[in-house]
Length: 104
Image 1 (tube, one colour):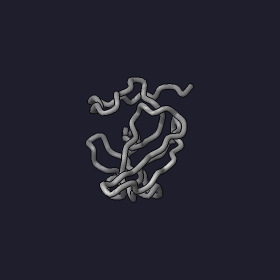
Image 2 (cartoon, one colour):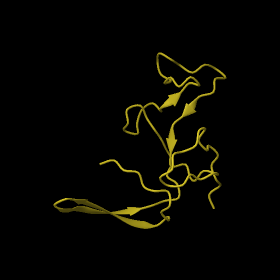
Image 3 (cartoon, one colour):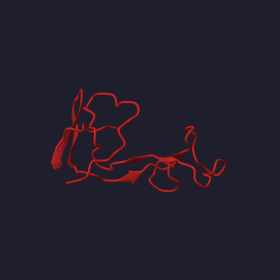
Image 4 (spheres, helix red, strand yellow):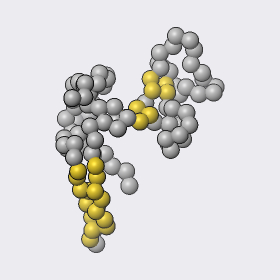
């Protein structure tokens, strides 16, 4: 199962109920946090090399190393709210908001 939780939920405990046509599959209690930083990895298991991109969008790797002074993008999640929030269900603007709001 893969899901995305809406931005509008408060930081607290929530319940996720998964139903199927034949009935309820399971109930999962969730603890929601203001932020839970993580870096996406190339093996998709949270270990190993980070997913980092050159300016042209190509993946940084053994065959395409970063050069001194080069600007790259590192793909992250859970860093906190952005300074210009995007409403739930609405596509992110292009370019996406990148400045993080200061956690209170």
